Image (cartoon, rainbow, N blue to C red):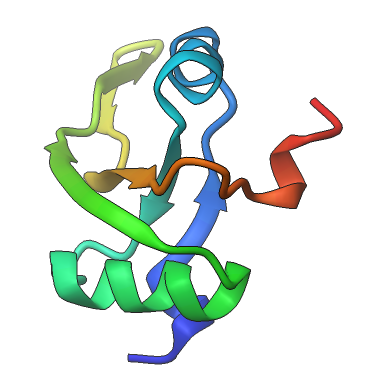
Length: 95
């Protein structure tokens, strides 16, 4: 897989902000077929940091309805990446 297709976008939530500040962990939405090793390599090469660990979770899409029609959002994968002490990712510094 290409690096930019593995890491889709950063997740900026209240919980991810707290984990970033306290534990040096960053949260990304990643491709559903990506493995932990691929995510680790992609983050290290894209942001030039040292990754200590990667945790992933498959998030099920929510059921949504519009009138009497029922549908579902897509399933997606979330990765929490823990960086070495002293390393940081610049895209999160402005937030």
